[in-house]
Image 1 (cartoon, helix red, strand yellow):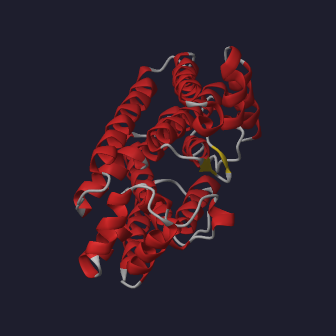
Image 2 (cartoon, helix red, strand yellow):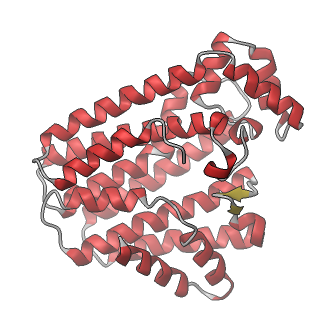
Length: 307
C-alpha cells in the first residue's frame, strides 16, 4: 500500500500543465484506499506477479478518484472529506478535464499488464458507473423504490468493489469458483458500504464524515433510509425537502427529523448486516490465511462505522 501511495503521486506528476495540481490534490486527499486494499488482499490469496498487482491497484484507485471528481461536477458539490472539491476549487472545465485524464491514466496502467480479462473487468465497471450515475441523477427528487435504489448502488458503488476483488483473484491465479466467490463478496460488501454511507449522511458527525448532515437529502438523492422513512412517516415533508434542492437549513433539519422519527435507520442497518453476512459466507470458499482473515475483518467493520 505504501508503494501504491507513491505511484498515485507519480500519476499526478505526469499530468499535463494545469491538471497536475488538481490531480495531486484529488489523489492524495486521504481516501480509505479500500479498493486497492481489496485487490491486493484478493490477489495474495494466490500468488500474483508484484508488478502487475501494483499497476492494477493504482489503476483502480485512479479510476475511483476520477468518478468522484465527475460525481462532484454533476452534484455541484462544494466539499468532500472536509476539503474543497476539484470543481469548487478549480471550476467545471478543469474538474472535467482532470477526471478525464485520470480515467485515461487508469486504463494506461492496465494496458501495461497485458491481460485483456482485467481490462474487460475495469471497462464493465466503468460502464456501470456511468449508467448508475445517470440513473441516479434522473431519479433525484422523485419516487424511487428499493429495487431501483439497489440497481443504482450495485452499479455505482458496488461495481468497483467487485472489480477490485475479481481483478485480484485473476492476478492471483485463483480458480473460477474462487473468483466468483470474491466477486459476490465484493458486490455485497459494496452494497453494505453504500447503505452505511446513507446512514452516516443522516446521523454521522460532520467533523468525522467531512460533510454536513443531510447532504444527500439536500441534493435530492434518494437513499434507502429515505425510502423507508417515506413508507413509514411524513412522506409529504420529506418529498418537499427532496424537491427543494438546497433547501433552507430549517427545512433540511425538519426533513432529517422526520426520517429519524421512523425506523428507517435501523431497517437500513439491518439490511446492510444481511449483505455483510452474505459476503462473509462467500469467503468460505477461500483457503484459510491472513488475507481471508483481513477480508472478513473489513466486512465486519463496514456497518456502524464512523467514516
